[in-house]
Image (cartoon, rainbow, N blue to C red; front, side, top):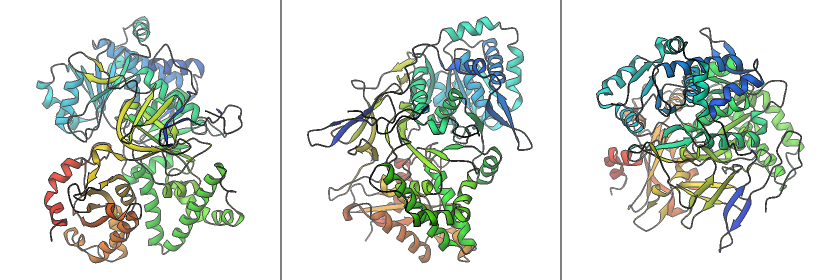
Length: 636
């Protein structure tokens, strides 16, 4: 049964352990947590800006970056007024309730503004990655029946223009960098407030809010219909659970700088959650290292959302800097101290250990100004929490960041579940897992190991173009994720891989590639890794090199002039990578281990067709395009 595991603290929800159901074999097969937030039975996301303006008109809910790099706060009242003005412009353009508006732009203030303005005008938004190909863009615009599309600049505008003959529903194409927002405001000046109020009144929790298209690792992307109620169920329970993140626990207000794409459900959910909780939100359109570091230093967020790649990059950059300064041994000792400290804190929270001892606390204090403060500075200096998702981070890196003073909340979810379905509970983390079910969510493990989910954030269904509605894709209320996982004795979920990615060697051994790939991707020299071996006698891997890590390795070994085509066969480089492979192989049995690997002279990228926009491997495309390299691994 659900039982409180911590004393109540004013303003902080009591931590509730999951209700657990066991299977016939005695293992936990289902876990659920009751909702922390009440169900929203009326209204929509369109009300959020106006609720904020009424309740706290002068409070800063957003910040916009000025040309000189400084940040200008936007009050709740000013944002609501701007949303209303843009919504009137959308109505003046002739867009009707339920029309779809596509947004194809990087993470900017205008993205969030247009998102909320579209809802206020009774429209449905359709995010499109700005890195999408012409084919992908045309498919999404066609399938959604988008009546309007807003793009960031001239290049994207030209690409969509070339496809317009095949986009019969597309009547408006706007280029955001040409002053479109200002023109919409002017265009809508004659629209009465009552018209907008009437459109808002037609929206409810069951009304579609957005169509988000899945990344499409195989086949064409499908449009997931997420309702206003799906987002309320997601963000309200996340805000209630992650109280330290979304609520200021010091004199400094909570804030975050969003640099993940708003085209992805993860970034979108956090942006809406910030507006709902009145957490100051900034946007960082560029994820180039130098641009992002400058934005983080100027904005100084209190928390971030990130994918593991970002946290791995910060760690590896810190270590590379220490190596360049001749202090790599000191960094490695500091890393081990941080990991032990994080593990000791976790043990104390679970009642399985006394917590960090005097010696460990002293060592951590010694390394804080030398190493950990530099890690925190790379994230802006004020970050104390990171919400991490997309793929497993790994217990080692999670423990390091915890020891360095940054608590990681790992989560797991899909587009179909409006982002997180599970998340690390703040008062009782378990490193290496993706946490407990989000309040209001249930997790079940099917007989074949597939993860099934149920909750208010589970989508309405996939978009049916012919009927302009969602087609449900749930069995008895449960959504089959396609992921494999397991629940431990306390209900923590671990994701082990994808059903469709399971390899079966010619010897009949089932191999889940994700743990090996995730471990290797954390190495500073490795950009991407794909494990192969289906119908083969043993498991092998294709490895690509991380540019920054490789550049550092070259400098330290005086090999800057060696061509990459030769470097991939360099014995010293291969020896370094072999040690990383050996470490990864410790995770699995001999039959599942990587016996051999090859280093490719080019990376897998979205542009090459080998990665999805959310950086997931397109296995079919990779194995097709590198068939010769794979065959070579098994010759002789």
